[in-house]
Image (cartoon, rainbow, N blue to C red; front, top):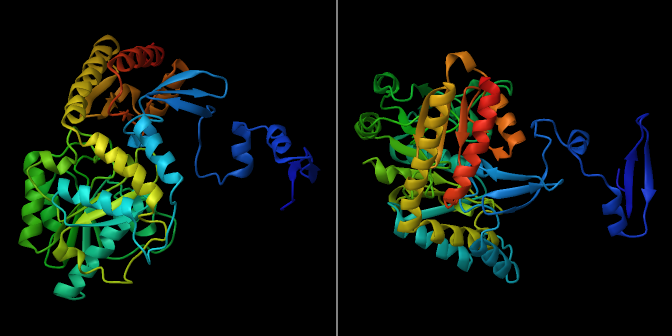
Length: 430
């Protein structure tokens, strides 16, 4: 129900009445913004915590009650430079006073500058901008199918990905992702999608054929539990793609833009994909995604075959350009490796005391602490306990506590935050 200059109030009896105020300011102050309001007005597909952050700076945030938290979650590997980084704030402010949005009947300077910097720094020649990782992966999958159709015919339509993989929440990408819990329950799924076992080359070989148009993989599984690939596996996947004239698609939505200590993870694996997707950290917190590829492959997305109204808008690209420039720096990338060691050492020390983790794994600043059998299923419990102590973490499934902090988090924040995290572990282990 829409009421001009008013607020709709729901009584305990469920009846709606309209209360009018003299000004918009009065309306704002009359509204109580609480966690309960989420349950009232939001679709219930999320279950957020009781904490409502209101401001952030660097690797720290503060909630409505001015409680302070050290952020080891990074907005799920998005806030690569922490909160309100001066360079991102400056880029947003400057571009916000110039130009926000255009249709794709025109291009714009920030998009062209960012695309040029991305192609100069990677294997790619061409860039397609979207708004998220899911959209970037959707574009990659459509491009792979179109490439195969144009070059090999209709029968070359098989897409292979890996169990426990995650590639987004569109119906196509969630089907390609290897987690049925996310894709079941929505009716018939897109066809010709198959799933192999990660780090099991024989499993992939059994599915590969001349009908395979693409193999899609994360160069380190994130949502699936922070699983690193072996060197032989990655090279074997590349070889199989070459043998069957299939494209290799790297989903670097979570691993890209410095997260693992290199600008993109493929740069440290000895293989080069045909298509790469990137998002999350690309905008440092501002929504943007991109698919990058070669000229020969890109030409199959002809005019009108795909698009995005907001993709490549000047505001997003200006912020992403500032983030990309800041992260693509030797000192920052080397710092990721040094900070990774601080996290790993601290987690191993905690584990020596409480014997709660089966394995500390991951790379760079994408780290997983996998729980021992005795504590299986309690990762969310640890997350909540850490939040109570003032440390924000993530989970990667029910059995892995995940850390994806700012790439430039101060060492002192790591030490202080891990001390808070240890208090949470002590409560669970005790």
